[in-house]
Amino acid sequence: MSPAYLEVAGLRAAYGDIQVLHGIDFSVDEGQIAVILGANGAGKTTTLRALCAMVSTEGSIRLGGEELAGQRTADIVRRGVAHVPQGRGTFPELSVEENMMAGAFVRSDAEVRADIEQWYETFPVLGERRTQAAGSLSGGEQQMLAIARALMLRPSLLLLDEPSLGLAPMITRALFEQLTAINKEAGTTMLVVEQNAALALGVADVAYVLEAGEMALSGPAHELAADDNVRRAYLGY
Amino acid sequence: MGVLVSVLGVFDVSFDKLSNGELWLAQFFRGLSDGATYASVALALVMIYKSTGFINFAQGSLALLGVYLAYIFSVEQGLPVAVAVVCAMVASAVVAAFVERVFIRPFPPDHVLPLVIVTLGLLLIIDSAVGIVWGFRTRSLPSMFPSGAPIEWGIAQLTWRTIGNLGTVFAVVGLLYLLLSRTKVGLAFRAVSSNLESARLVGIRVGPTLGFGWALAAAIGTLGGALVVPDLLLEPSIMLRVLIFSLAAAALGGLDSMVGAVIGGLVVGLARNLLVTFLDLSELALATAVAVILVVLLVRPTGLFGSTRVERV
Image (cartoon, rainbow over all chains, first blue to last red; front, side, top):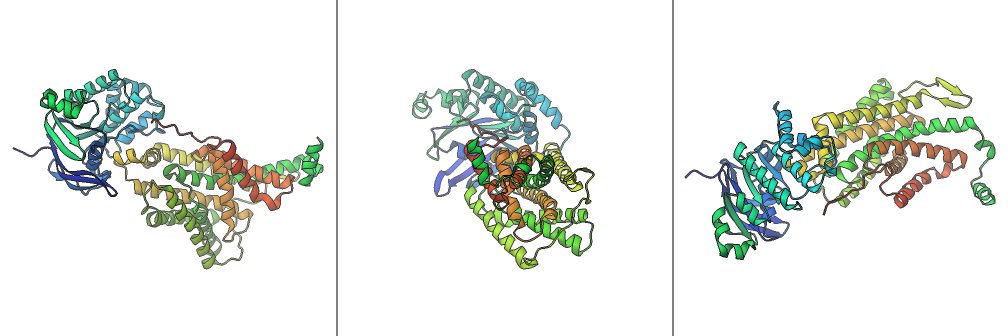
């Protein structure tokens, strides 16, 4: 069996003296959607931040066979890792269009312009508001912009931290449908942290459940969703 | 009315002065000329504040160093003043980039207080170093602009220097706008100013971007110093006074607004000259700057053009 596209082994992370991740292992195959579930404070956000060197870490993070641990955020981004942080992933003072251009900051190819237009077609509201300051958009529109901004990198791995946070259920469903469509069309590997376990398990291929900084469970998403004990113990629905 | 007269009496106001239109106009022009300087240094302060969230108290000191270099290049080395000023701007930009790399970047960018203390320390160190190297005797730096006045009304003169100072500031604002809105490094700088974490996550190298901001701000501050020093005399404490007026200008404009910095600078320049002339406040000129800062903080803490930060929780 060939190694997975993203291979994480013995990942530990700490904020100062407070150890948040106690050596977790997980992997995501190329083109898959993986979801990380768990209670508040389990270390889900920290896991995503660790992959981008936004927190001090130990352990191994291999992407396409290449070690990312020890590299700087700016260099990890240049390897094709895009990260949509929780809540405020946009540049509020910059226009929608400038946000999109910032998303393509490390690219120097000639297709940036065409990509912007393409995402305006996927998210028409962004096209309509292209000259408006991002901070003037609604919460849902800002979340779309943050995701479109991340896609402007043409990422090989997209990290999404609570994309549904603060969004109305209908908008959340539409957003997840768009994410699956992008995953199918572009083959973008995705790692999603999500509170809405039912929704996330519906679109994911594999699922991991974190508990107090340790990996409590893992398996194909549909199996976890079907297991009543798992649902009662970890997923709360 | 009686109260007004007695209040004005405290300030020894002469009604001859107040009704002298030419004097008003003369002070108006002088105010604009001073204001152009305050606007330049305020612009530099705002650039750093916008991108880092703290006030760089060493901004005036970096400008002081720049103006001394301009003096060396022009008076001692014999370069034309304008060329000397441009060389000094480049040199102070290099020094500022070095200072940022060595003294600022080691500190975590999200803890503002230690950084403010560091800039206060830099102010003392640079001002003293300038005094040690070049001494405390006063020198005079010629202006970049010709003397004389193309337009005169009696004692009121619109001098070339006033025109040049104002033109310089507006040119700087125009170029800065183009740089920040049309270039990639400008986009990086604005992205870092807007959201540090997302800037990292799109691959912007935050440290060098902030270093670039320091270099650019120092060059603009040096230019501001080169505009004002011909009116005063060059000595090691000169930019401290300018810094205080520029702080008032930046506070009035809203600290995070570049347009606000320019308008704030011109208003403070005008207020200073009019108050000093008509209320005979020459000993209290500096106090007018402090008064502006106090009033702004009390009445409208976001200044005239500052943005109120609204955050979704």
